[in-house]
Image (cartoon, rainbow, N blue to C red; front, side, top):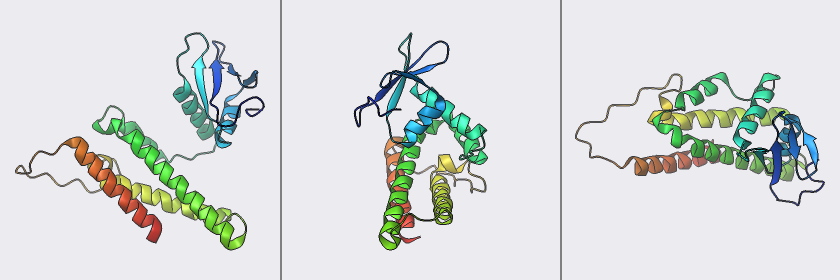
Length: 197
């Protein structure tokens, strides 16, 4: 499908027409959302443009793929996570959340690859589903704990303690510098938790 004409590592252009059909310019064929989901899983990079206006629709199409996956019973996103995510729209942390989530998922992916590599070395095969399930639960717990470390994220985390009030004599801190400091601190704690448990 995607690899017939596409050069390895090249971004594939998908055109979306008014009739809602998606056209893969690399293969000169129409594709479905399911085909695009398969391309993502296979590591093919693509962008989606409106065929008439040339607007970038990639984010909307990827969101639509997630919606389709979730609605057919492939639930990956917990309801509480979705509620928290919605709560961040329009808030002060909206600008920071995308990079935080991207960093967290990158860290999660690296841990999964390291674990697969360790299992391959130790047993000569990929780990069983039960072991991966346990790792996913552990990583989700790490993610939840990391969310609680930031006052803005902890406010929407169930069971989180309210942030202690800042004393009035505390000198003014640059919010961006403070956010960077907190991200570095959180990254260090995530690394420490992932290494030592």
